[in-house]
Image 1 (spheres, rainbow, N blue to C red):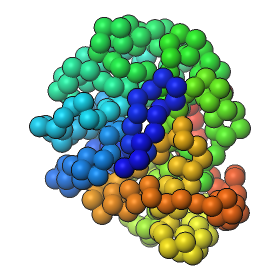
Image 2 (image 1 turned 90 degrees about the vertical axis):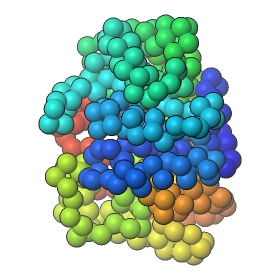
Image 3 (image 1 turned 180 degrees about the vertical axis):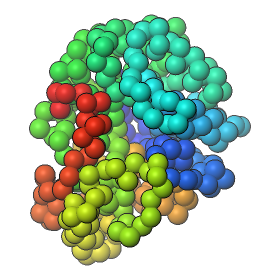
Length: 331
């Protein structure tokens, strides 16, 4: 497994990371035994960056990761944790809390659930509109000084917020959606991140399955599956987006790789400071995704891919309208 450094201030990690969310939440039922086997397979393949959130399955994801790492060398892995999302007992979203006292409270519970004495990268899941980012980052900085956190990350924030946060403490990386169907960060957020020495951990590299090459338009989704309400999976939007995926498939087959591998490798090719997160829930999908790490494109191949799926070609917003207010308004 190749490695990359997360920005100027972050740790060195595997060139592809594993996102664990789908093993506990938001994409329908998951097989816990297979989830554990998939994490073990990732570790054996050299994956060191493991991304979770304290609200994924209301703590279940962290407990799953704890079980997967039992007996493993803790110093070999980089655990990235998102915090601050508030949920009700029925799974509903209740906003975000990034007050300094809440930051320390969330961290304490995560340490206990993960069975570790530190978290490698700690980040608010979203910007709390009621709390200045300086206060939130300042609270995490105190945890860094105390040894409970190694690096500070951010998630889904815009350029102005990045600048304000970085003025308080070095930021290792910004976790944000980036794929052939979601390229908004290229205009302002990515250049600003690079100017500040902030890396990017890119999630949604397969556009939540649209670019996986495995999506069946007639697939039945669980009521709690995020895609049930995602505009990109609805009606004509879905047909349009799957046509884009078919165009990518044609390019991929010409190179002898799968659609998913082409989509992941394209993100990785956008810069050494970008680490794609793959959300594989099974060993088979993991093996396919990790093989993308061996793919290298020529400039002509990259041009052909971007002609197949031009910037802005996706139909539908990446989040449902009611969820947009949770995103930082400056990107």
